[in-house]
Image (cartoon, rainbow, N blue to C red; front, top):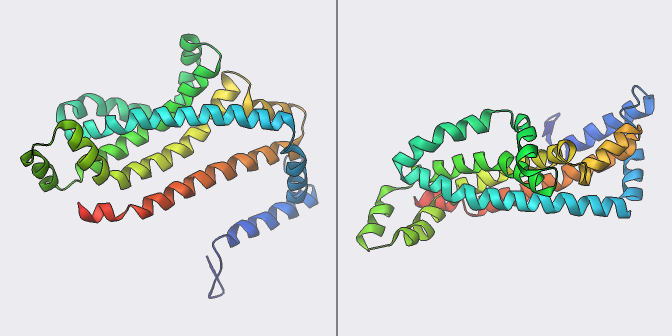
Length: 250
């Protein structure tokens, strides 16, 4: 970010928006937006309470399992689509449909099939994340230098060895990029699941605070959620940069 010819730190824009938020809150323009200072005071009051810790544990459990299944299923599927034309032609239309479709509309179907418990929330989280992971893994495999594949065949590599030693590592930058975007989508999926399927976790806190017009509490929990998503995303972006040299080796 540059201002008046000077380069400012990367977080400067957040400071500017924070000051604007504080100003709007102090002016009392809307009850929906309390002063940012009040939100942070409320955050430190709420963050250690048993209700918050329970909600954090439930949300983290559904989120971690949802992302885990999205990666475990999505990465091999994407690699298989990238290396097998028949599988690609069979699955690619469905992947594109689910990626572009409003997945919230599928939540009632999941509730009928899997009930109102944590299982449906985990499946919802997985569905939000998996499709972009599949497409990125597929794109990474399709950009692999074919000489690497031919070399593996010449040395008698088994399909499993080719997968673990050629396809996965060569496509790793794209895979990590897909996982990073999938994690962001998974945050949306877990909150939607907790709001629509079973009112638990952060979804229960959002429901409670909004129903009682406790907007400082509402924004405090939302800031925690944004901070967690941003931290995970930046960590994966760092890993993505660290393995970017694989792209040059293809």
